[in-house]
Length: 262
Figure 1: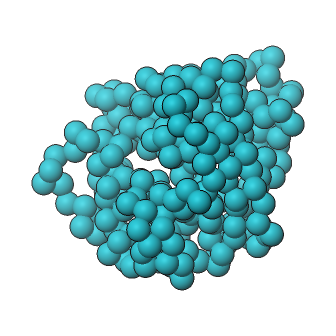
Figure 2 (figure 1 turned 60 degrees about the vertical axis):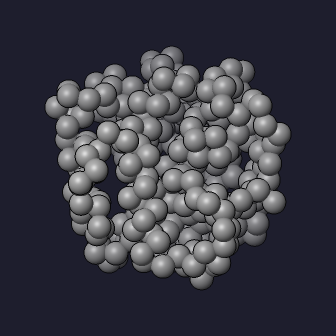
């Protein structure tokens, strides 16, 4: 539910803090939310998000969906290309996607075999993944009907820290990252009871929103680190990804976090 920026002070990720971060993410994406809306429990947060998405589906508000076609999952390459995709988006397009909670569908396919039939916004240099949209849902109906959901059921395993440099796109279209020097951050990802598909979803939201918010920009370096759980780290975070715990739906879990620059 959240990729919202934080204050950067070392914190312990208590259930109360996770709830606060998740609620702030909803309000950051949709500042038009009524102030009296109940966001005091994980169930209330989920209900609020479903209400917003249903409202968008009815045509009363803008709605945008991105489609990622994944040939194979290579963590560092996928992180780099996810950021490159988000960096390529013009501000108005990125903002609509942000208000739609950076909704993304992950499909299994070979981008090189599809690029002549479908319009992709960004294709990884190594052909491992490609992104279409974000755009109204009907724009990608043909692509979504053709391909199956990416199946990444295997557990995510630990890895040695690896550093990724975020590329500079031809456009750097958002214009939100050109005025600051590149920085280095740690990117922590929880692995306990997390599958590859979970990682795609949770990291996808965190990175896309971090790019749109300006937390991650072209030229930045991210050192990717695996930990069983983020709750054991008292780390100064710049942004956190908080979502419903799949194994305990009444609770929230911190899936990924970006530290302050170091």
